[in-house]
Length: 252
Image (cartoon, rainbow, N blue to C red; front, top):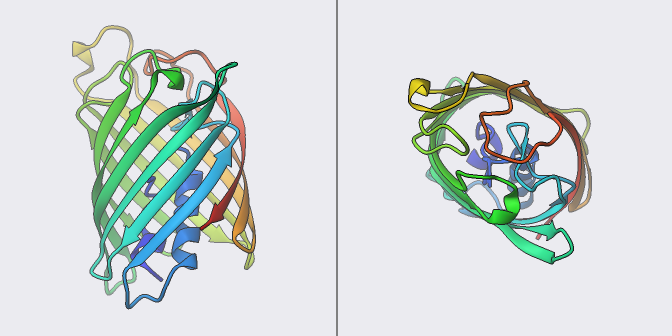
């Protein structure tokens, strides 16, 4: 299995580094569709989702999005990814939503665990619905086993009201059958030095659980995302704290 397939919840993010958690599963599908482990791997995925959720917060103002994810895995463990997305504007057609770049290093240990370190930078347009903080950078480190992984991320310029933040994440992936997958994660976002910010910035919990069914190169996705109640952490328009996300993706 490639480094990309065993990476700890990486979001090319776009994600997601991310970003919406299904990207981690898409990364797994990309890794499954490319060449043998002795060579570098290049992958591309086109996807569409009913909403773009990042740690329980809508980055598409509750509207459908389309995304192109590109990934590269070298046999020595280095990897890079880039993504771009468009959003259905309100009566304005398709508009550019955002772009992300991601790079890092992953290595499988003798124990069977995989370590992963890297950085991601994402930028969003005014069509995201975010009132401020239209870009962010995070560095991360993680450890993953066959079914469960953990990661810690630190950002000096996080989205919304806070600048320095740390995010703790526990995620899992299970193959229910050859073509049916289940995956999920729970995270805790903590503002650092919150006394410097206006408003009440309390730690915020986010969670996601989803399933996906592949049909050849096409995969259907369904996930539920949620976050805890405080709404002043992100400077964005109000949307439901819990949402059902539907999507479709295909490898190129």
